[in-house]
Image 1 (tube, one colour):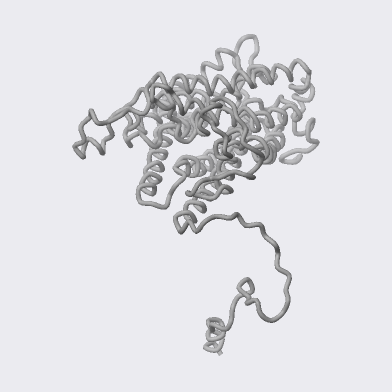
Image 2: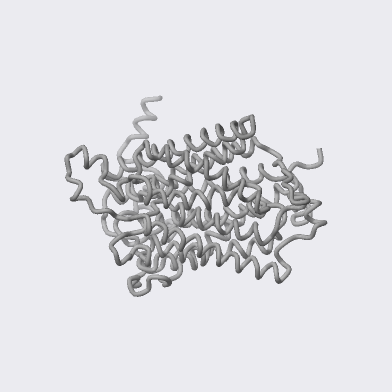
Length: 466
């Protein structure tokens, strides 16, 4: 009996439903629009599927942000935070499809970007978009859309517990459709930061400034204009308002760390040849070392400062290390990546203390982690030895003379590019938040804030009444 089953299964005259021959009966076949591409081979297929899977990992980071932000805030605002993170991805993918993608990569629609280095628009969606011969245009869009949503969602935690839902949706739409894509075009779409006259090129491999700096400085603008939570600062003194669930925060950080292996290694964009495979795994190692160094240094520093190790600062130290290495994960040695992450941890603690002094309420540390460490990441390329500014270790061992090496960037190029991208995000978002505040649509009433935004804005609770 068993032999008969196997004979039937593997008979050449038998096929699966999707492989049914044209023959016998007339059947309905779904008409599917297939992209017309040349026979590009297995490299194209492998690059496409791995870029897509990298985008999936970046998508998972949305869950990490949701857990971190809700855990670091009051339980009465958990639904509100989860709602904002949900809408960031829903609004983000649609607006990035119809507007943002065409603004960010107009050259791939046939626009001459050398004549329009600051602003150009290629088209809507993927119509007329050519992604080249490495991977499919659809995989390209999907990966880039996840980055756009990440930049938007960074702000959610910084304004938690006091921002009206309508105002937040306006913010999310503007940053995803216009602010992020325009500065992304400057660096990644062929704009002016890739066309410096001195031959140098601003370096930001996976988006410490382009993604995290944009989100971090938008968070600073939002937290500053909307003002602190009720009771956060009393008579000039800081009053801690602890979050409701550190286990959620820790889970969120580990999800983010996991997703970062799509964010950084995935930004290599090509995976099929030996050199690319080596680069991808090397980037994964530098990312890991920087995160570990950031978490350890932040923990030890908080222990020395406060007498006991602070879990929340240690977790933010991990994120600081991840943001700090994102711009330079492709060019730092393993040892330098540890130093980059360690310095990022120091920066995040000092920046958190600075916000306390300025009485700017950022409940999750969005600006210290993403804004300040985003700056450090790009400037580190102009400060620390790396393959963009000095002869690489491999070249030295190979005996290549130092005079044959051509630097790809310098400190001033990095400073100008970082300041331009972060300044663009801060100024545009500051203007938007001021307009909404003036219109009276930015902040909820004191009564609604006291009751919690879950009830006042959504009419529901995260954990019920028990």
